[in-house]
Every structure is written in structure tokens, then in C-alpha cells.
Length: 108
Image (tube, rainbow, N blue to C red; front, top):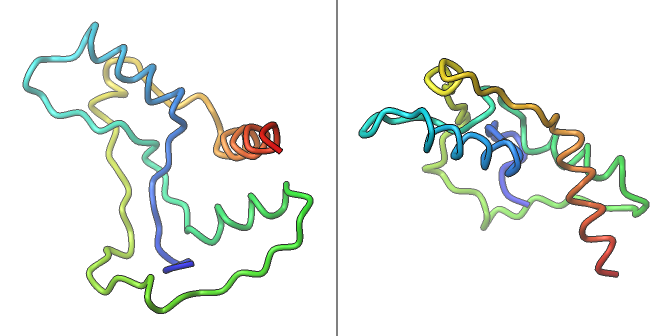
């Protein structure tokens, strides 16, 4: 793994599709909108959640070659413009992660 302390904004693709649909219907042409949750999660938090719902023992190793000195420590979007059109995330990160894990389990 790279930087586990980096903070990133995650949004479920199903919420993102709803946002794009809403933008197609109600967005102002030429206006910039951020499709994001507006909430930051440390990469390690996401990883820990995935491990906690898996049935596997997982060892985490940070790889210095995956560390990028130019990375911003925190990237969190501002979705207020999209919220103004009536959009909000509806799928919690825990559901997103469980659904991703279930999807990959169905392939085994």
C-alpha cells in the first residue's frame, strides 16, 4: 500500500450516476459541479472497514515506492452546488464497501 494516512473523498458510483442524471436535467451548462460526498476518509479507515467485513486475515505493508511526495494529504470535494439542485449522497460508505466485497465474492 501507499500512503494510508491520505484523506480522500469517496462517493458510491450509484450516487454519482444519480448526480449526473440530475445535472443533465437541472444543471446549468458551463457551470462546474463536484460529484463528491464532501466527507473525507483516511485510506487506512477504508482498508480497515474492508478487512473487518472480510473473512480473510490480511497483512498490510506500506511500500515506499508507492508513496508520492507530490500527493496532497487531504482531498475533499465541495458538493454544495450539486446539493443546491437537490442531490445528496444516499449510500453510506459501509454499504458501498460491503457491496464491492460481495461483488468480488460472487466471482470466486
